[in-house]
Every structure is written in C-alpha cells, then in structure tokens.
Length: 510
Ligand SMILES: Nc1ncnc2c1ncn2[C@@H]1O[C@H](COP(=O)(O)OP(=O)(O)OP(=O)(O)O)[C@@H](O)[C@H]1O
Ligand SMILES: [Mg+2]
Image 1 (tube, rainbow, N blue to C red):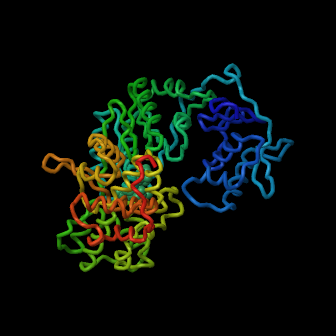
Image 2: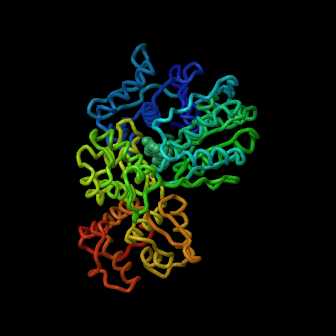
C-alpha cells in the first residue's frame, strides 16, 4: 500500500484506510469488523502471501481462534466483494501457505477523490440496546445525566469491567429525547489505530467521506446539530480521542461528549466521573439474606448465580461467603458475573475456595461478549498491554504489597537505586489514573493499593519476570524483617514456584 492516508481503488471499490471504510459506487459496503480488518491487512501486503497465523494474530489479537473461523470471515469478505463472480479476482487462497490480495490497486490523487458528502437528514444509527438490567447504578445515572447538563464534556473512568460502557449506554437512552438530534454512539473498542477514530465517528454520523481526512465533513455536519456523542472505550487511542473531542467541542457549540475510558482523556474542559465499584456489605457485618440483597454486588452475584446454577437461592448462612467473593473481586461487575457463571460446577463454597486463583477460574464469559470480557485475564491484558514499559515493570513489582503502601515504600520495591521520590510519585499517579491502583489520603499522606484482581494479575507477571524473590526481599527489608520467615498470602504463594535463579533487579526499562 502506498501511504496509509491514500484512497485506494480496486475494481469498482474504493478503500478509505483512515476511515476504515469500503465504498462501492460511493456507498459503504456492509462488512463485519473482522472481515474488514482482513481486507485492510491483505491490501497492505498486496501481491504478497500473508500466512494464516499472521492474519489471525492481527485480526484477533486478544483471543485464540481456529483456522475455520478465519475461513468463515474470508468467505464473508469474498461474498461482499463478489469475488470470483465476474472476471475479477481479489483474494487468492494459496493452498498450504495463506492468502494473497491479487487485484490491481491504484492510489487516487486528491483531485480524483470526491469532496466530502454530507447527508444532513441521516439520523445516527440506533443506540446499542442495554444488554443487561443495570444493577445499582441509579444514582450514578442521575448524577451523570445532571452533570451533563452543565458540562459539555464528561468522561466516565474506572477499571476494566466496572461498567463504564453499560452506564454510558443507559445514560444515552435516558438522555436521547433531550437532544434534538439524539445521541450518536461510537464504539472505539474495535478501532485498532488512532487514525481510524475520526473514520469511526464519520461512519456513525453518516458522513460519507472518501477523503483521507473526514474531520472537516464531521465538523460541517455537527455545527448544525444539537446532540450527544458517546465515545466509548477510548483508553487505547486516548490521545487522538482527546484531540478529536476537543476539536468537535471547539467547532460545534451544541454538541456534548460523553467518553468512557479506563483513564481520563486529560483534555481541556473534561470533567471526570470516576465510577465506583458495586456496593459490598462491610466485612464485619452480620446480616440476613434479605439485608445483604440491598447491596448491589450481592444482588448481581445472586442474579447471575441463579441463572447458572438453577437451584441456588441465597440463604442467611451463605451471606458471608457471597460478600467475601464480591469483596475479593473488588465489586467489579464483570468479575462478579464471570465468577457467578462458575457456580454450576463449583457451587458457592467451592467457588469461594478457588478464588485465590481468580485468573485461572474466571475464564467462562459469554461467547457473545467482546474478547476482552471473556476472561478476567483478557480484561487485565487490555490495560497492561497499553502501559509504557516502566509502568508495567512497576506494577509487577508493586504486587508484593498485600495491603496499602506509601510512595517511599513503593520506591524501595520498584527501583534499584535511590530514584527521585517525585518520579516514583508521578509513576504511581499514572497507575492511579489508569485505574490500576487506588489512592486515598491518610493523615495528609497519599496511600496506594492495588485492586485484588489487578494484584493477582501483576503477581503472575512478576513471577514470569523471574524476579519475584528478589522483589519480595526488598519489600521485606523495607519493613525491617526477614522475608524468608514471613507468612505468605495466597498471592505471595505464587512466588514460591518462581524461578530458583535469582538475578539482580532488572532496570525498569527491561
Ligand atoms: N451495573 C451493572 N449491572 C449488571 N451488570 C453489569 C453492570 N455493570 C456492568 N455489568 C456487566 O459487566 C460487563 C462489563 O461491563 P462494561 O462493558 O460496561 O464494562 P467497562 O467498564 O466498560 O469495561 P471496559 O473497561 O473493558 O470497557 C457487562 O457486559 C455487563 O454484563
Ligand atoms: Mg467499556
């Protein structure tokens, strides 16, 4: 492919790399997102054989799929292109090797590209339906909706699976009728490059553009609109999302934006709404089943557990066990749902007993869920993969803290040297911002803590880095006792099987 910005033509088709669109006769061709990614990848390597495993890696980066699945999507793509129907061939199956894009391709000059075409009467596509009954979010829905009346730009932030998208969808439905032109919902979760963001917004707004830059067309349309735009799942394309949001708000006075992201966008005039976990009964409380069901985390668990294990009914004796499960899962709805689906095989107490291995057992999400929501590990992989290297290393090392810690203690375990405390505080602040650490102020001092689920994940990564014992010893030295005689928590126990070989603490960049 000549340049990632060029509009490309093959047969009767035009391919808009930046907008991630395929047009035929100026009309968008309906293509599933996987088939579209396959096409873009093959076109990027036009004329060369692309191996099946390369294609699978690119199109399903978060999940393992069989070759059969790839074949199904290739077949759908060929069908959409009418490949082989006339004389034109586009995608060749090179038996035993892979696939190759074989049609002649040409890059169009600016003069050949149609001007942006705005379809002013086109309504945005229908909102996604609320997939589940939202539990325990009435207050959040009201607060968010009323803050959106004063603020033009709100971001719902919080850890993976806490329910940001679910809340944004519910808010979009709730507010839809208060905007003359309704709500436009843009899911950026499947947009893999920053460049494709404005294309996704253009597509959602019905702005047909086959220029490499759809933003002018978007702005022209939006200056005449009173609407709410939801930019969902921004964290992996955060900088471009921030710039686009700011550009839109600067140009379109009657547009408001609601973003969801694991990390605030840090854009001008952004107002952040940190979504709290679902409510869990206090650990010391003794209560009946009816009282426990007043807590949203318990309610969600019980509702999903009843769907999984049909005979399950919460009784008073079960309350502490369920509360403990919800607490260990940090009140995260996704994790609670994943746990409840295991009730059919483990039963309640069996599930509670296995939760020390939450990454190993929370693996049975709905087949229809997006890949990063099918397992707890995949949810955390998504956050981890977009961290800069130094933050990845720091997060792994911080997993040796079973409870809370301050910046000075953090410095002892994450750096080998006398690093500047301010730098460590910056790093911790970034991890807080990305919803991987929590922070509270205790007697004028910032105190940090990892969520239990993040800690289990980070501990597993630390183990893979072969530096578990070393970091644990540094942690122990910082508290002035001998690590080898200290009792181990379940997560620390993971370290026991870490590599025997000890190597000096690696540099943060490794
Ligand atoms: N309040 C709730 N009541 C019932 N189920 C919920 C609630 N919040 C979330 N869920 C469930 O948890 C799953 C994950 O929620 P959601 O997609 O909203 O999380 P998210 O915070 O947007 O995650 P990500 O950071 O990965 O985008 C949903 O599919 C939904 O089934
Ligand atoms: Mg989301």
